[in-house]
Amino acid sequence: MTQVLVIGYVWPEPNSSAAGSHMMSLLKLFRAQGWQVEFASPAQRTEHMEDLAQYGISSADIALNCSSFDAYLGELKPDIVMFDRFMMEEQFGWRVDTYAPNALKILDTEDLQCLRGARHEAHKADKEFDTADLHTDLAKREIAAILRSDLSLIISSYEMQLLNQVFKVDSQLLHHLPFMVDLSALPTHTPSFAERQHFMTIGNFRHAPNWDAVLYLQQIWPLIRKQLPKAELHIYGSYPPPKATALHNPKTGFLIKGWADDALKVMSAARVCLAPLRFGAGIKGKLLEAMITATPSVTTSIGAEGMHLDLPWNGALHNDPQAFADAAVQLHENEAEFTAAQEHGRAILNQVYDSNTLASALLARINDMQQNLALHRRENFTGQMLKHHTMRSTQYMAQWIEAKNSIKS
Image 1 (cartoon, rainbow, N blue to C red):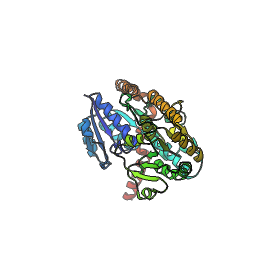
Image 2 (image 1 turned 45 degrees about the vertical axis):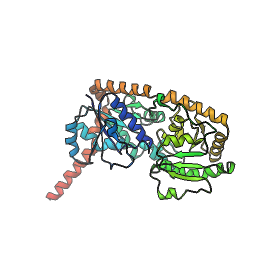
Image 3 (image 1 turned 90 degrees about the horizontal axis):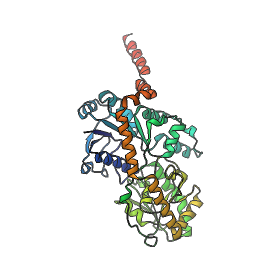
Image 4 (image 1 turned 90 degrees about the vertical axis):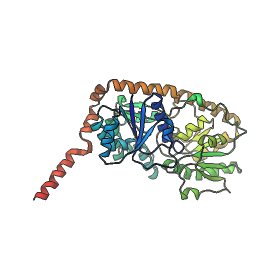
């Protein structure tokens, strides 16, 4: 029986983040194949983490920079090891190479950290992002982890293009995997236009792009409220800090709601989802949930990036605050535009996020790689070279010898 080990940067919290939902969809897919799946993480367990045992997934606590992991790996004998974000490949990849050398190594990037980081820096500097901004130490680390892995899962079509064209990563090392949505489980009925009211947004407050979007909404909301004086904006998200709750203002309808037990329920109750994201990467879970609940959304070009091919958006895309506000008001007040946006969302779900199509393609790729792993690795010479020079061994060996000789003298 195939044994899968998933090494998590954090414990999955599907109700807190899109990354948590994406991870759970992968874990469930692996279990559906009859594979044994174990999730291990050096992170502390959290109050909102998923109960993995209910899905037949075992779990383990592991330590960073500790040889106890080597013994654990030798006992588990995984056939597949999946790293959650590149930092886990950095920490544990070389140990997997040593103690489970025949295991297929998959890197689930979640989103490109170097892209999100570079855009964040550009935003703080109040400048336009350029691909030249990507050439950072973070990018070198992340791309190196991708090259050392047998296969990397890339969630956004934009990021696939970026890796191919800017970083020249071989397509044989990459697999485009958006969020997997079970179309057969979509709600058969969602509240009508008349049954909905107000605006909403949702997102983990610890995630920098989400917090920035809340701050940006403080500029946009007065423009909406000027046209709709009785409207409310309900802001949901896990781990709201005091600086967020301090923004709660019933007089202006700017309401910090905090944790939502059921994200889809609160999304369904709203007439429009607002997501004015000014930086970030990957696919935005809140915007996908908006499509699932047939809730039109207004977002930015970065918010919708890599999410809808060339299909019309599930609402409107604007980077200018006034245009953003005007579009939000139109969707809130015009039932015909509201209904058209819902239809666009359904088309995007059907063509981009069908779990059956996406799962079949991923499993076929994994099976092919397992059958031809030796050849695949031989053809990835750059990856093998990076493994050879992992930890900059020549530099540290020279420094160790120098230090040793200085002690002798």
